[in-house]
Every structure is written in C-alpha cells, then in structure tokens.
Length: 635
Ligand code: ADP
Image 1: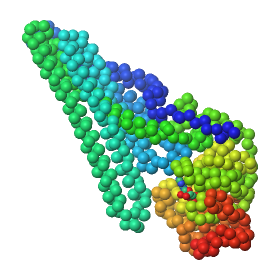
Image 2 (image 1 turned 90 degrees about the vertical axis):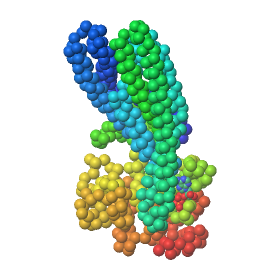
Image 3 (image 1 turned 90 degrees about the horizontal axis):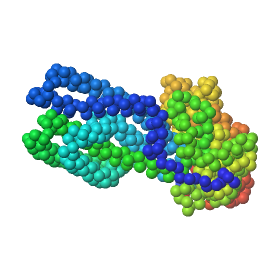
Image 4 (image 1 turned 45 degrees about the horizontal axis):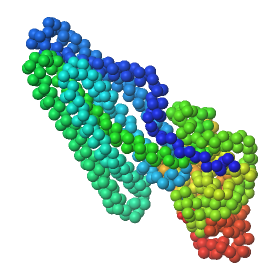
C-alpha cells in the first residue's frame, strides 16, 4: 500500500544561500539598479580623499589647478554621493522586504502544516519567537546594514580603498597588510567566541516570551490560585537570565570592537612614522600622503562597519540555525500540505494568499513528498465515497509520538453506523479523546486503519476531510473576530451568505443572544471568545458546525455545568445538529448516553463493551458499575 510507505526524505534547510538567492533573483532589475547605485556611491566616496590631497597641493602651490575649479568638482562629488546612496538603499531595501515577506510566509506555513506531535514538542512562545525575533534578525541583517558605513557599502569601500592604496603608494602596502591582518584576526576571534553567546541570548529571550505568553493566556487560573508571586518569580528568573546573557553579549561586543580599533590605531601610527619620513625624504608627495591619511580613515570606518556587520551576521546565523533546527528535521503533515497547496493553486481566495503561491520549484519540493502526493491524488480521483457510509475504526493501535512506548489504543474496533449516535464512555485516561484526535486525523494510527465506506481515510487530503468532519469541543475556541465570522470560519467567503449564517445561528439557539449584542453579528468576541459566556460559545460552535453541514460529527460533551436554561438551549441545539449525521460523542451526561443508538465502553485501549444502555446495564459489567459510581456525575 503506497500510502503506508515511509518515503520521507529529510527536507532541505528552510533558509539557506540557495533559497535566498532564488528569491532575490526574482527582483533582478531592482537589484541591478541598486548595485549600480552602490558602485556610483562608492566611487564618489573613494574619490574624495584624492580631491582632498589635490586641495592641499593647490593650497601649498604644488598644483597649478585653480582653486574654484577643484572646489566645484568636489561640490559635484558631494552632491552625487547622497543621491546614489538613496537610490541604492531604497532599491535594496525594497528587494529585501519582498524576499523577507516570502520567507516569513513560508515559515508560517511550514509551522502550520506540521504534524500534531510538533505542537506537543514546541511551546507557542518558541514558535512565535521564530517568526518574530529570529526572522527579525535575518531581516535586520540587510535592513540595518545598508546604511552609510556598514554591510555591502563597507565591503565595497574596503575593497576599493585597498585597490587604490596599492595603486597610488605601493611602498606603504605592508602597513595595509598589517592593518588587514590585525582586523581579520580580531574578526576571526569574534566569530568563534560569540556564537554560543548569541545563541544563549536568543534562547533567554525566547523563554522570557514563553513565560509571558503562558502567564497571560492562563491569567484566570493564575488569579484563582493566587499564583501571581510564582509567575513573578518565574518571570524574574527569566529576566535575570536574559539580563545576564545581554551583559555578556555586550561585553563581547565592546571588547571586540575595541580590539579592532586598537589594530587600526597601531596601523595609523605606523603609517605616520613611515609615510612621514618618506615625505621628509622627498619620496612621497604631500598630496598623496594627505590622500593616504584620508583613505586610512575611510578604511577605518569601513572595516569597523564590516566588523559590526560580521557581528550581526553571527547573530543572524544563530537565528537562522534555530529556525532550521526547529523546522528542518520535522515531519510535515503531507496530506494537509498537499490539500492546501492544491486548493490555493486552484483558487486564490484573496490578495493575502498570493504571498503563499510559491513557484513550484521552490515551494513544492520543500514540503511535498511526491510519492505520497501521487498516491493521494489517484486515490482521491478514483474514490467516490458516499459520505453516507459507515465510519469504521479497524484494529486501531496508537501511541503518541512523544511517548512511543505507551500504547494508548491497542486494537480498537468500532463501527459508527451512518446517521446514528455512538456514545463513547470510559474512565478518564481510557483513550476517548485519543479516538477523537485520530478521527480528526490530528494523528495517524500506528497500526490499523480508519475507513469510510471501506476507503482508508488517508486517501483523502485533509482539507477534504475537514469538510466532511465537524468537531464540537466542550470548550470551543473562538477567534478574535466577529460572531458572524466565527460561525462562517473555515468556509470560503463567497460560499456563505449572511442569511445562511443567521439560519445556522437560529437552529443553534444562538440568534436571540447574538442580535442582543451591541453590534449583532458584527460584534467582536474578544480573544478566544472571552467576551461570550460558556453556553454562548458552545452555541456559536454548534452554529458553525451546522453551517458547515458535515456528514460526520464528533462531539466532546461539556463536563462543566451550565445553568439550566443554557443547558437546555445547548442540548436542544445539539439534538438539532446530530440529526441525520454519523455522530460520535464523548458522553458525560446520562441522558446523552441513554439516547444514543449504541454505547462503546473504552477500556485498556479497546472497546470492552458495546450495546445500548439497557443491554449494557443488564450485562452488569464495567459499564454498569461506571453508571453506578458515576450516576451523580452523569446527572
Ligand atoms: P480520555 O479522553 O479517555 O480521558 P485520553 O485519550 O485523553 O483519555 O488519554 C489517553 C492516554 O493518553 C492518557 O494516558 C494520556 O496521558 C495520554 N495522552 C493524551 N494526550 C497525549 C499527548 N498529546 N501526548 C502523550 N500522551 C498523551
């Protein structure tokens, strides 16, 4: 079975020279323009010391040129340089912003399409750190280094100056060699010593932002446990660690910069001694000597700029390495990635999505396993599953990827008959939620399969699967958009009318409360739906599922007690939703269990008892005792 084959080859690094180049090369014209302007600006800068030398020669009468003519040439030079610089900076910056947008979008997608275990492994703070501070460092490398005396500009000035110096005064070349040697040695030292320091700094920053995210996303829990002091102490220790690594980093930076400067002062002093005596002896003209000193300063600033840029480069390499190490070795959810890519390519829903339309050569091979894709495609094409078929879990084995030796499910069999309700019961930890996660295809069974009408669900790409399965959780998460948008979430804008939304809301008993909100359907619900009550959130989630109208429904029944009125409204809405759908419900209420067409009791990772309420009670097995002990909880 081709779908079962492990054909994952490790994906290439996410960010590397090749990829940067291929993205940059899409903006060749601008890039070329920018480089020409850089050449112009550098030429201006590099000509300046020659003209200062001539200026001195004119002053002491060693040069016949009239002063006004020389001054007007210098004036032209001074006027051109900033113009060239502006053209260079604007164009280079524009190209880089565009390249970075593509990379940012790609990294976001790359995180979005990871398999579920990836999100078990990494904290939200770490992931947002990749997209904000780490990518920010890469962006800053160009954005902040295209200024006057850093980056490319510094590099071109260093090269240009050295060439000119060799041409005008080859006698003084050894000094230059000394200077360059001293600077490169300090750069090399810098390179080696700062990598771990930068890394530690980035990590300290990430764990600090982690602590912030965790604290404020759980603010109610913190408050109800009086956990402020603990959070403060935790954040305090993170801040201190950050401070420590910041100070260490600062020390490294300053020591290394001073090292460079010392090297440069020594070179200058040597130049004064050697050059001065040569002028005295008449072997070198005053003009050349003056230009030379000018060039040494140009070189000084350019080399310093380069060293700074090198420093940034180290930080950026560390950041890029973090991004690559988090994302390169991980597994992509192929079925999800393929579906997404196909959908976006077929139909770009809006302007923003255009950013994600990578050209095939680049985007595709990054996250698509061709073998898997072709298998998926043919399966989708051939298959004409009637979604009105039964859903079967056949001999399903499963262990969570992060705890591979704990078999949570071992040989679970369950048939969800079309249009009926199956209640899943069992003690906490029995694996009920795990079954839901497998049905939702967040995880794949390690053995066995899940089928619809006999067709392995892995034959469907996940966007298709998302359309046929609705999941309503006990504590539904809403997004911080309007109520209406929350109900329509996941459906393409053009396919949902306002009337449909209202119809779904009415059927979910949500319409009444929605129109009493300040802006009706346009009312924003706050972060994670925090401005609505628990019962209201549930009804919005039910309306969302009704609108989606998927044939398969998974319900995780609420354990939290709602007041009697909300309870009745929610239950009523749920009954409406379940009608005619193949439903699996993790049941907590006795009434739900009693009304279900069949009850599956989950124990030791399999279905231990199966039947109706009366059958199972009569059997006097685990279910009967569960009902006995949990009767109160059920009611
Ligand atoms: P139930 O829903 O019946 O209470 P679950 O399906 O949530 O049970 O859990 C079954 C077992 O799987 C438990 O032992 C739990 O600790 C473990 N488990 C649940 N989620 C994860 C996860 N993401 N990673 C590792 N183990 C998990």
